[in-house]
Image 1 (cartoon, rainbow, N blue to C red):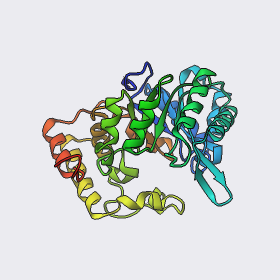
Image 2: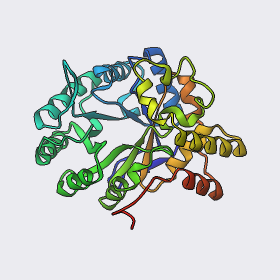
Image 3: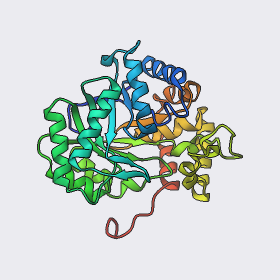
Length: 319
């Protein structure tokens, strides 16, 4: 698997990151272990998690693996903080005390003294950006995080926090990016590239829709059929997405590869993308993504996909 630099930082990661959002909830220890083994065998290094995934269960499961057969030096850990759990549900909170308390709890669950990349999970319109930056600075200066970044921030907020940062620099932004979700091309990716940040693309398979498995029906064991994940898939079960999925399937048939290989190849070829985060419920579901990393799309196919999936861009980005 290819290794890529994250923006202009010194951090180098695998072109695919292993997503663990379902770990300890839909994915048990045995399947998670099989996924991690397959990922490492394929040359992967970056494991993506968050304090909020399964209320810390994902991190705890990774920690148990690190206490077993997996060496800490074999993997790079990216985790996220900034979503505080309350009785009413999750609340975005990027204040200094919440971020640092969450990081300490993450490190305890993970059973490690540092993470390789620590991200502010979501944009907080209330907490002062200077306070959020101070938490990131403390994390790096104390050795608890090697590199820091943001996730799910709008373009202006991405540019603001990166421009205000000095030491440490904001090295990465993690955003949803796929053929069915190209909104970050309007402002987020240009801001990231201008300020030396690498992009980590989450859900590069369009929340599973770009695999083509929903073209005819909803499989009973799929996310779209899951009580707690159906709403996650629903935004891309529309006519526009169906047209894009059909184009991906046609390209895949011509290249004799699975549709997900086409979708992944498209994302990994985009300027500024350092890694694409792929997650699966089982090791068998993960295998096709791991096998697809070497595909390069012919120019004519890439151009056709570019045209059919192009997001609407208007004023002020385009006049």
